[in-house]
Length: 114
Length: 118
Image 1 (tube, rainbow over the protein chains, first blue to last red):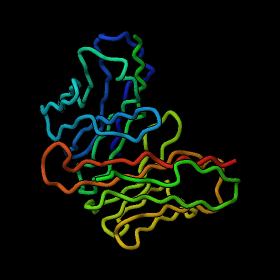
Image 2: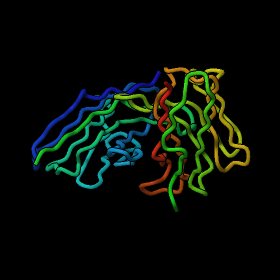
Image 3: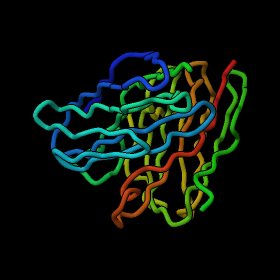
Image 4: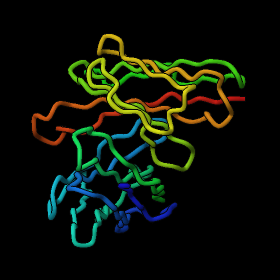
């Protein structure tokens, strides 16, 4: 079945460092890809999405490009801030049906130190 | 738009007791989803509704679990005869109709209901 694999964390960076969180997927059909972020004590929030190959999703300085050839959707940010500390989840939608349900990776914890 | 609301936020119960969680989705969202998240893991799909119809249930949803959405608005998730393995965060999400734009066809999540079974 469809699945998502993320790099293991925690990822610890200094403020203003470059961030990459790797995400690869296995899917039949043509899924949409998402990054969600979960701050402590809060629900998951959509960070960005891409709906087809070569699309780039971007939001709040974060970017990810839908790479069909490598089945990847890596999350990047040029300069992280302490406020970016959170758990990041890569997810895909079921592209072979119209259920709208998401399949998530296991999450990657990011800790940014001042 | 007050977002997706879940209650209670925390529930501590003894093994064997029944618990019920409630989810109030965003009013214009016709699809509602339940997920379970255990510590250090990503959310796992349990079930979803379109209006009042329950259209899919995961294998994770044992016969001790039942979900309803009687009037196509709020939903309840009941767990009977709770076990320690049921301890998790139960997440509810609703889906915006596909009208285009950043928020189209994405799930909006509530803050979750944390269950601890002693």
